[in-house]
Length: 145
Image (cartoon, rainbow, N blue to C red; front, side, top):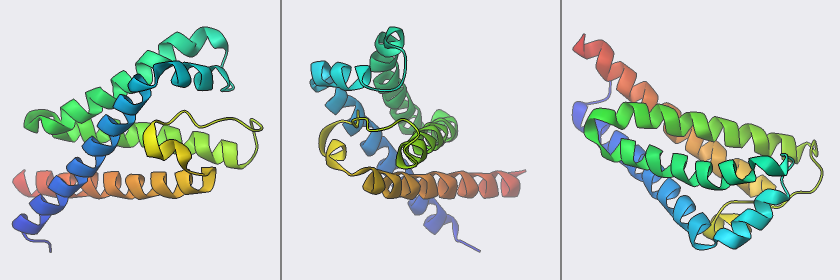
């Protein structure tokens, strides 16, 4: 069994990784807003959804980060962050399967330079981080009950 100190350290690392990644991604998108909008218009979604997506995705990323930085809401934030990563990963899998044809990445900063294969590995890593955190939180809740 994992000691409480080790569990807390691993959880803190998980929250830090997710928070850092989401803040970085959201800020990069917003700092390059015009490029983000152009890339989003090339996605396989109707253009009428572009305003919702260009504001909704960074807002959701920042919200998840804020939730994970707030102790009472960390668990909810991790569930939310992991759920978003599941959606993003599913989308990448469809892209890798050429379901949509060739489309640009709408991620911000350095992440936008990844190939779709690198994106998939990156997302799987964060899914593992999210599932690890959720598992450790659940184990703690079982012991506390």
